[in-house]
Image 1 (cartoon, rainbow, N blue to C red):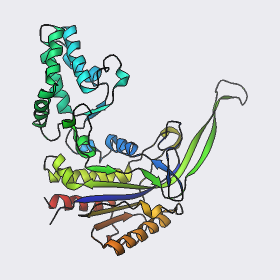
Image 2 (cartoon, rainbow, N blue to C red; image 1 turned 45 degrees about the vertical axis):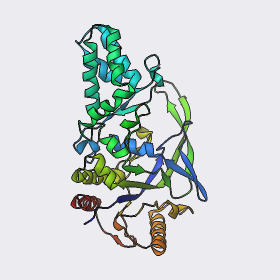
Image 3 (cartoon, helix red, strand yellow; image 1 turned 180 degrees about the vertical axis):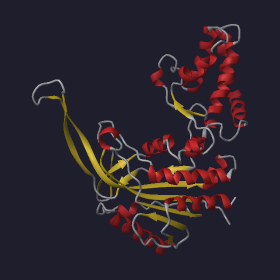
Image 4 (cartoon, rainbow, N blue to C red; image 1 turned 180 degrees about the horizontal axis):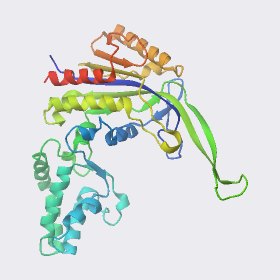
Length: 373
């Protein structure tokens, strides 16, 4: 059995009275699409919540170590690990040189100028070992020169080779899944094997301004301690995720069973982990009401155009539009994907293996990936 080239995950999930993902003005993110403006959840927001989910199907339950995304690695991870080596000056010189090499020339003087890099635990351990070597040298100048040489152009290939020799997951599990870009070292980049679209409502935006007061417990009468307003939205969102299976397997060191486990967990995360701000006042938690997974060899194609004309904000209307769009695509291009459906309510999706639980669906896809190795 040939391994599927792509896995496509489609989901419909509804939220009421929430503010899931805000823009720089504090309003819900939006997307002009088709015949109206929709409420949007950015792919970055979705991936962040899936990465950090404390869940039975969290990425941290898969096995390989997760990475650290931060601009505070020098202060939080490198310096504390240098305790007892060399002098304060040589320790600082070594860490400062690594900071400049990883971030920028101004990174030491202006930490706010740094970008948050995704660095794997094996990489952190390697850099700490080199920083400790540098700090043991006679003076700060020698310590700086030792680290600077490590990152010089002619040495950088050796550095990349040394890190890659630690295994395919030297940059952490997230880099293998969602990719990594290091502008200072293209050899450290990883292509994303999991592609996540911005989610959007299948209907026009539904928003209102929530006016509220804060009551002062110690103030007499009905006076308010503050008067505020915020935006509140409701919506039925379409989510779309693509997994490039061969690339995922390659990024995981040709480990197809591990790739299968990743996809199984991912399907659960997409369906059950909610993004959201204002959790204390909106409790924005919901499970997907429909999950459709397709596996096949052809280039993926989103089903977003099923909602180019806004539909009623119901799962029945959205599911019908999705199934109808699939039928048209099949009529024009022919079928080719294996489809599996899990849904709260019955839905006739062309060629779909329906009436599955989410667990059964995720396991079936995982078996398909692992069994084709």
